[in-house]
Image (tube, rainbow, N blue to C red; front, top):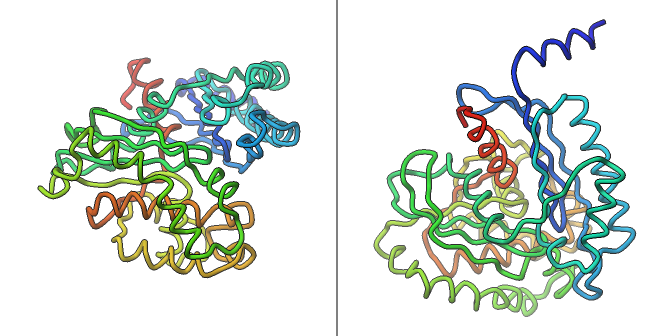
Length: 333
């Protein structure tokens, strides 16, 4: 009787939206209902599935990676049914873009879970991440450099800030380096200083190209640029800097870190082996193998554009999807 009342109450309270983001490393789901200030979260899910494991060498999604991912997607499908979602969008990014057997994987996902995965390009991925993070941008700075460090790739976005919660995408670039690819190429245990320098240098050609195209360094020198980072590596660094005994989104999302703070945490992580990193709060065993690669990409970005501080966002593609779905329905997001 109580369950029937709950479902009846949901039907009268309006539509329920869901966004699923399947990346190279992580599967994330967010289920919300629109509210006056955006949306209220009804349910969420995040699991490291390592879908892109071995993809760099084989060009294929492995059966083990597919099975891990399907287990997570079954959990997501159950949550979607339980919350009686009325509209949703499910997207997949770098691993599915690159895998030769992606079509077979997508068909299997729909057959076994009922969810239709949409493979999106790098520019749309960047635009969704930027839209999801826009509410954290400071309107007093005319430009924003936003980055999303992923598993198989990293997206950089150059934005014109048009008002609080609003920004226009000027340009974007997808770096063929993410934390999973860094771990495969340079190792995941103790990282030598030489390997770490090689990690940072690996991404620099793309950063320089993006800078030359958009004259970002000139805008930085003029004091017009703010920097915002979204993704696991950035939120991990923030959690460690804040000394949190366990990860808390309410304390991390929206916090600001100076470049000195980032350097301090990065130096600590580089000194540790994988097992020692796994014992740190806010990391865990799954992310320990990839934490240093994330720091290397982050350091390269900070070195290229010395803004001085970063605002941290624990939001991105899912929130961008939801804002679009709700706005298209005439909602407030």
